[in-house]
Amino acid sequence: MKFPSRVLALAVVVSALALAAGCITRIGYGRISPATPDKTIDDLVENWRNYHVYYSGLNQDRPSGLMFDPRHDDRELMGKRWEPVNDRATLDRIVMWLRANDSFKPRLLRIVGPEQVLYGYVYTGWNQVVARAVDMRSMHVLGLPTPLPENRRSPGR
Image (cartoon, rainbow, N blue to C red; front, side, top):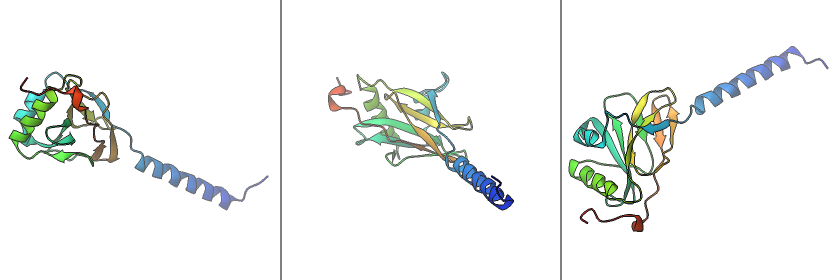
């Protein structure tokens, strides 16, 4: 069976466009890994003004995690269930509550984009954090589940 050259050319163009569209919209997922030993939560808190800081959770006294997006780069971390932290006292309170959780010991994680560039940090006790590239400069980080109340103790105890 012989195909006309126009049909073959059209099939090649349509296939190329479909492949290109898939590459543009499916940039990939970020890699979440432990932060390097030289970066700590205390360092991030001390230098919090260098970051856009967000928390995920029910409220500031029931946080699931903190996200630190460096201010002075051309990349952005975003997410629907992340609320901004606008002052140091609130940040200290959230860190205190995260550290008080017996079942979900928090640790500092790096968010690295598909192009192997650091986008920021997440401080959480959850084992799974999902970040997906939105475009070449933005990563969407899913909100974190809230720890159950019976898995927490009061920081004063």
